[in-house]
Amino acid sequence: MTAPMISLPAPIFAKISPHPFLVRNLTRSSTAEHPPCRTNGRATQEFRPVRINAASLSHAHGSALVRLGDTTVICGVRGELLPVEHIPQFRPVDKEQLRQKGEDGGDGGDGIGRGELRDYDLLVPNIELATGSAPQFLPGVPPITLAQTLSTRVYSLLHSTGLVEARDLRVWYSPKEQKRGEDTEMGVAGDGREEDMDEDEERLVAYWVLYIDLLFISYDGNPFDAAWAAVVAALRDTGLPLARWDPDREMVVCSKTERRALNVRGLPVACSAAVFMEKEHSESGAGPGDSGHWLLLDPDRLEESLCKEVITMVVDCSDGETRIKSIEKQGGTLLGRELIRGYAGIAERRWKEVRRAME
Amino acid sequence: MTATTLPEAALGVLPRADGSARYSHAGYTVTASVNGPIEAQRRDEHAYEAHIDVIVRPAAGVGGTRERHLESILQSSLAQIILVKNFPRSLIQIVLQVEDSPENDYVNTKLVQASLNFAIMPALMQTAVLALLSAAVPMRATATATAVAIMHQDGAKQTVVDPHPRDIEKAQSVHVLAFTSHDELLLAESEGDFTVKEWDNVYETARGICCRSPPQAKEGMAMLLDDESTGGPDMRQFLRSTMGFKVAADLHWK
Image 1 (cartoon, helix red, strand yellow):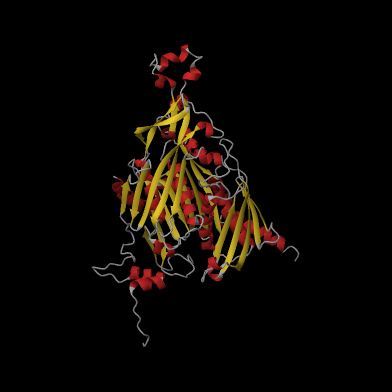
Image 2 (cartoon, one colour):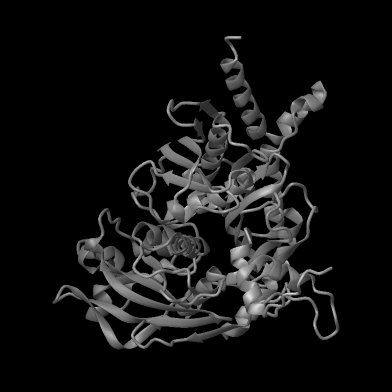
C-alpha cells in the first residue's frame, strides 16, 4: 500500500474526529501497563474523584465547592425571611395540630411539610453556567436549555427527596416564652383562660426562603452529579440565624451570633453514565448487539458530546438499605431492565465515595 | 383511583400542518402538529441527520424551565425512533399544545410550576407519536408510554396506573416508562423513594400496558383471563386501531 502514513498528535486527532479517537482508545489492544481506557485515562467504570470543600463563602449561610475532575461548581445557600403577610393565599399553620400529626417530629414526608415548601416556593435553586467555563457557553445569551433543565432537575429532586424540612424554615412567635411570665406550664393555662388564647397562642410569623445558587466555574461534563453534590453539601453546611418576632417593632429580627444548623435528611447521591456506541452513524438500535457499546461512568465533556443515551440514578444508602430516589434514563434503547438493575450497584459504590468526601 | 376512561385520539385535526393529532387520556388533552422535513436554520443544521425540534406549550401561561426539561426529554427520545439519518440538514418540528390538564383542587394552583410533571409525559409522548404517524415521517419504531405510581393505601403498597395529580402528591414514587414497538425501554423517569424490586414491578406493569402482544395470538378463554389479570389500557393496540381507522376512513372513496 502506498497510502501515506499520517501521524497526528493525539489532541489534533481528538479535535478533528472525536468519535474514532474514543473508539480507538477503548478498543486498543490490552497490554500490561496500558489497558484499554478512555481518552481521559480512566477505565470505563471509573469515576473521577470528588472533592468537596464546605463553607468556602463567607457571606452565605452555607456553601460548598465541589470538584469533579475539571468540573467545578460552587453552591451558596442564602436564607431570606418571608413574612407570612406577604404570602398570597396563606393558610395559617397550627402548632398543636402539627404536634399531633407528628409532623413536628419530622416524619411528615407527604404531609403538610412538603406542601408548604412547594406552595410558598421556599426553596429556590438557580444554576448559572459561567461564560468561559466551557467553549460552548457564549456570553450575553439567556439561560440555555442545559441550565434550565438542570435547575428543573435540582428543584424536582429537592422536593421529592424531602432534603429540607419545613419545620426548620418556620419562624414562630410565642408570646409566653418571650414574656417569661408567671405561668411556665402551658398545659395549665389551656382551659382556664380561653379568652386570652388568641393573644397567647403561638403563631407562625415568617418563613425562611432558601436561595440556592449554583455557579459552574469550570465545566467538563457530568454537570448534574456535581451540582447535586454541591447542593447537598451546602445545605449540610447551612446554619440559619435564630430569628424571633419583635412585637414592638412588628418585624422579625435575627440574632447576630447564634445560628441553628439545618436538618438535612439523608444523603442522596447522584450517579450518571452515558452509553457510547461503537458506530457513529449507524441507525442506533437497528438490532441489539449489532455493534459494541460501552457504559461510560461520569462522562466528561468530550464523551458527553458523543453519547446520546444517558442515565442518572440518585440513591441514598444512609439507612443501611439502598433506596433509589430517582432514575432518569433517556435518549436510547440500549439500557434495558437488567442494565438498570445492575446500575443500582454502581450507584451504591459511588454513594460510598461521595459520603467519604462529604465527611 | 385509576382513570377508567379509555384513551381517545383524532388524527389530522389541523388542516394546514403536515401532520397533527389530538389525544386525550387521564384528564389530559394534547394537540400536536408536525411539520417536516423542512429546511433547518443554520444554527440547528446537522450535516448527517435531521434536527428534531420539540416545543411544549402549557395549558395556561408561557412555558418555563419545566417545559424546557420536558422538551429535552421528548427530543432525545423521539430522535431515537425517527429515522433522522434519512434527512440530513433538515428539521422536523413538533409542537405540542396542552389543551386541558386535570386540576388538583387540594392545592393552590400556581401558573408557573418548576417541578417535574410526570403525569403529562405519557400524553405528550403518545400525541407526538400519533402526529408523526399522521405526518408520515419515517420512523424506526413507534413508542408507547405510561405513568405508574406506587402508593401506600391501607398499609399495603398499591400500583396505580395513570395517577391523578392528587395521587401523585400522595404517592411514594412516580414512574414514567416508554417502550418502542420492539419492546425496548426508550425512556424511564422515576422519582420518589423506592427499591430496585419495586422498580422491577413497575417495569412489569408498564410493560403490560405498553407492549401487550396482540390478542389474536391467544385463544378465546386465555385472552379473557389475560385481560382481567393485566388491566389498564392496551396502548399499542390503541395506537394500531387509531391508525387503522384513519387509513380506512381515508381510503373510503375507493
